[in-house]
Length: 76
Image (cartoon, rainbow, N blue to C red; front, side, top):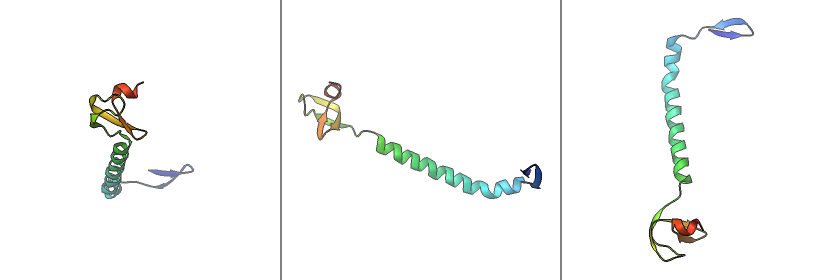
């Protein structure tokens, strides 16, 4: 039932809901894709190589101020 200011103004049927359900599902899927894309951009890019600070090999280099640092050098 659709009520406005205490008065019955309409009835929503199962058929009404089924008409818009595919559109709602598409909107939810697109929203999930957008959220996934945004979270991908927020993740740090991790590389393997030699740390620019200590010179040690690392499988988890992250760029900080233009230099690639291992986790140990990033924490100091």
